[in-house]
Picture 1 (spheres, rainbow, N blue to C red):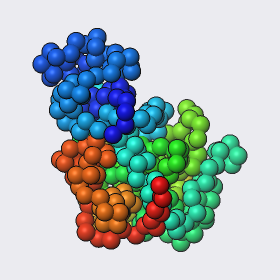
Picture 2: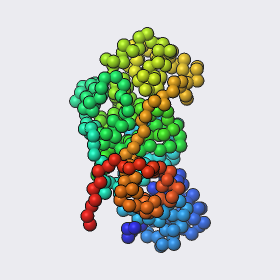
Picture 3: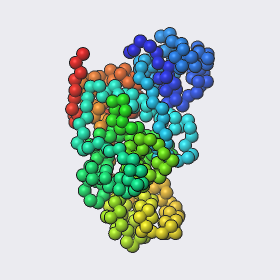
Picture 4: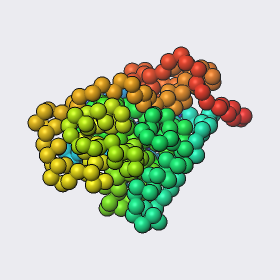
Length: 360
């Protein structure tokens, strides 16, 4: 545990628990005034040990959580697949939990290193390609040596290229994923909602890869560009176009199993490359609404793997290779056992990581 209480970590824990300062003061039973709590969060007041213990109990973390001296990142500028109905409180709680994942990974990466099996995702300014997003997606496919046709396992491909995918239940269907660029000794991070079906998972991941590739600097067109990149990466026009003929609901159902994307994504791609008209596009969208497929499409895609492994391997490396106990991992992360197991469900499988032992 460090020497100084970090008030920003207190604010982060409160953010994740969806508690206002007033809520926390009430949970503490009045042992702190809100003004004092505000001073603690802003680093103007160091709490006594008994107060630290009370804060930890109220926020369901270990006292060590508050003594992490790491800085906290500002939320990304709309690098997320989300719907407008998502409240600011829910969004900030998700971003806060992502920040905890990032801080914990930073602690782990001092002792391990992940070997990339593919070249890392390139950084490409869309303007350098004349705004031709299709060509950028083709360049990425070529860089990763992807074969013609559907991407068999996009999750494995991204992780082989050094992207760390952090899967967890967002607790809401209103956001599918968001990402963070490589920084501060960490690789690129993509956070994905495990509550979405695999077909949507693949498009969400491709969308976030698009942000990592094209958007080191945000721009007003970034969400449209990321959607176009995702469609182009997963369904290259040259190979996808002949498959659409003739365009019909039964045909799109067949294509879903082959290309591994949602029927709605197939509509979007067919419209994007001019295989269906605006009128047909609207008709097909209305038809799946009429059939009740907006929330659950037909076709079983259980053959798709799409299971992230890097995050699990990082934790397993500490437990199996570096000799950490679960209690020690909890203290390292500042998490109680329940949250530790919920955030990092691990198995007894041996981690496939190259370990670096730092001599002190």
